[in-house]
Every structure is written in C-alpha cells, then in structure tokens.
Amino acid sequence: MLGLTRARNQSRNGRSLHVAGMDFADPKRKANVVGKIVVAAGLIAFCLIMIKQFPTFNSPSQFSRREMGVTHVLVTGGAGFIGSHAALRLLKDSYRVTIVDNLSRGNLDAVKILQQMFPEPGRLQFVYADLGDANAVNKLFSENAFDAVMHFAAVAYVGESTLDPLSTRVTKWE
Image (cartoon, rainbow, N blue to C red):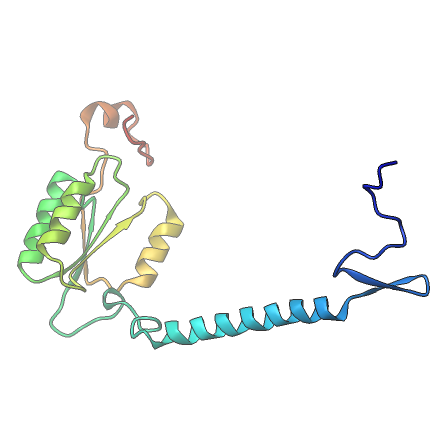
C-alpha cells in the first residue's frame, strides 16, 4: 500500500491520547471547548444586560395602556377605502388608532401613507390579522386597551357575498 492511511494505534493529532492500550481525551482540547462555552455564555449575558438597558424592553406599549384624554380606536378593515378614510379622520382628530386588516381587499399603501402623515410614536399601529382567527383576535384584545371599535372589515363585493353569504374566510385575489 502507499501508506496513505494511518495505523490503528497512531493517535490523531489533538483528538486523543493513546496510553496502555486505552484512548483518553486530550485535556488541552477539552479546555478549549470549555473556554468556548464560557466565552459564549459571557457574550450572551452581556447582550441580555445591554438589551435590558433599552427603555422599551420591558415597558408596555403605548397602545396597551389607557391614558387620560386619549381615546384608542380599533379600526377593522382599516386598509380598505372606507376604513382608511375613517382612520385618517380619527388621526386628524388626535385619536390613537390601531388598524387591523388581513389585506384580502385592503391596500397596504393606504396604511403606509397614514404612517407617513402621522409618524409620531403611539398614534397609529397596523396589525396584520384575520378577524376569522379567534386566537389572533384574542391576542389583539389582550395586548391593546381599546376604547372603541369601528368595524369596516367585510366581504363587500356583491357577487362574492351573494354566492356564499355565510363565508367567514376571504382569500386574496391572485
């Protein structure tokens, strides 16, 4: 043979020690692994400490607490034509607005325009959710403190609504 293979009793560099017919782990290699674990744990701890320094880390959202003199309105279907105009009027009148829409009929650009017009924090939030999903609705109401709801989410196309009047799910047009 050409000698390209190693004999069975030869140790592999840095992997183990062969003593008295037994293999033992190289203590230097073990220390190297332990050192890497210690460094990784230190970096994780440092990152967690730095993240907790940010003021918004543990503080509740402005949308999740009630404030005196501020009315928080949930606008369902707020990315649609009527819903986005209702949201615009509310924002102009200094209301706090949460728009929820699954964008099956709504237009995300309408929401983006509202966000550009009212960029200050705590005025407008958009939540992508389907009102037919009970878990999403429960989460929405548990994470926000609404004072009022304006409901504009609907299947408003006559053809669709008359073909399947009991449908709760809407799929986006392809």
